[in-house]
Image 1 (tube, one colour):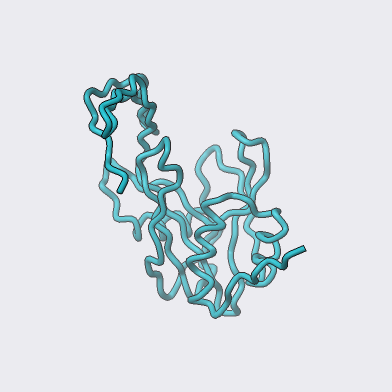
Image 2: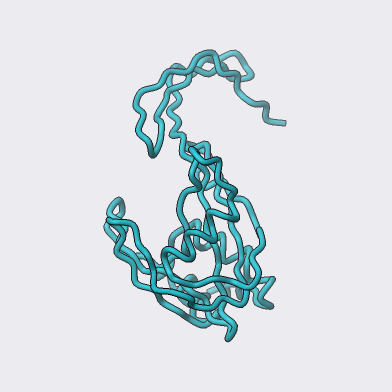
Length: 190
């Protein structure tokens, strides 16, 4: 069984309101010491798979500067660590702000570790059923989002073709599909 490392010391390198970057000196179970293991501390993230009454999935299309691509994603963002915001409340807030939709029912379907090699945060994934559009989106000052609704098979096709390649979105869809009566098809061997 793999044993956890022992943290001998931790030093903050950089801190903003968005994240903290630190380096840890760690002792491995066999006594070796790793002098610098870099960790990014983020608040927990949330996203929600919103499903309308007519079984369409609501997605947001937005440009992601870090990888230079426009992506299709489920609405989501950070929970507010200053308010100790409940993940479900944060997911519903993000859904309303980014799309104007509100679900009849929302429930937690999974908790992911987005990048456990370098980040300490979790992604809380919810499904929102019976979503209805109640208002226009109310975006943050630097958000440019286009709301898109697609059928469940269309979303699956976009994942399998690689058009949707955001790993958190793919994992969230995997959590949601059984609840919607769908499963990803098995790849065929060439």
